[in-house]
Length: 122
Image (cartoon, rainbow, N blue to C red; front, side):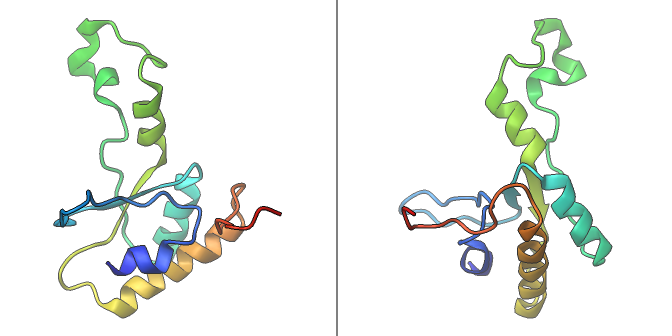
């Protein structure tokens, strides 16, 4: 997967494939605490993104009768705030993915979280 190669050393949390399995990648959802900033940078560059399931199930109006509140499922809430779906479809050219990755890398430089994960202990 090209996105994994191009974005693997960034501060983005990338989707994982289970061992021995191959994903169909109908969505490619990355996570970052500054998701809105990254999405805006891509939108400014005329690149469409998506926010799939930004409101966790326990906070959906249809489940209000269950009485759950903000904070009941903090991981689901965090994921909902941090997920950003990148363009992915059969006609997406490698050069277009490279452009998307480059814009993300440039924008990550200005984010509060370091854009590159360091393997050094210094």
